[in-house]
Image (cartoon, rainbow, N blue to C red):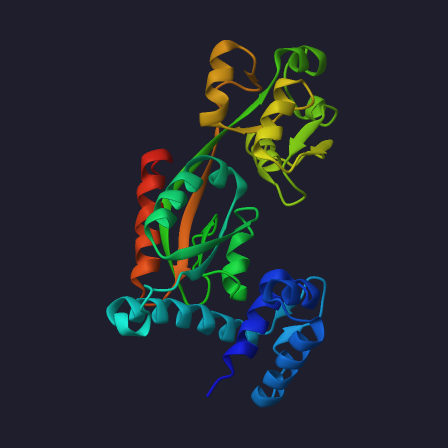
Length: 298
């Protein structure tokens, strides 16, 4: 029989990235978390956590984290079917998901809010670049993710959502200052660009598509979709803006396309753990419906 308090400690370390933050989330001491995981490792006969910054699960640790999340879903559904198990109603189950910031700030958050308002869940959202959210699934830290990868993570199903369109844009003043004779590789190598984080490669991908070779871009880093747009409007730099958010500014002239008619479409996919769960199926349907109404068909 598995030690579920120890499994909960393991999952908390993987989710939070450290023993100290895991202890805070579980309302116990770091030594208690360490002892539980050490006893579980002794029983399993192998390491379950790589003590790095942040902590990462081993393959066995990943599988145990996935098992715990799935057990939580199954127990919640059983409480719904057998009310005697939960006289006050089914307990809310934690549902960890990963998503890229641009999706979260546009179509994902409203759909998630509607789902969570009607379902007995406590959603735990992790934000990362769309090219890296698959790693959250692979590690077992989340049960579902919006990702840029069509390759399913181990033990997961993958479905296309559509493509998010981006427009390379800047303010008219920025264009006049940095691109008076037009946009080319040489001028882009001098003009400040905007990136969301060190993982953000959208600007590089757009440049590669337009000119056929990479360009070393000067970068401002702004880890907020709204700040990203605000910075472009203020003339701080150029960047790949979400089409739906940039459209009114392009229409009124406060933003200008760097190269008209050169959007970048980024395909997105919904990946989720391969487990029989009405809650996870409901979440998947809600995300696909919201994406289908917002994203471009690929």
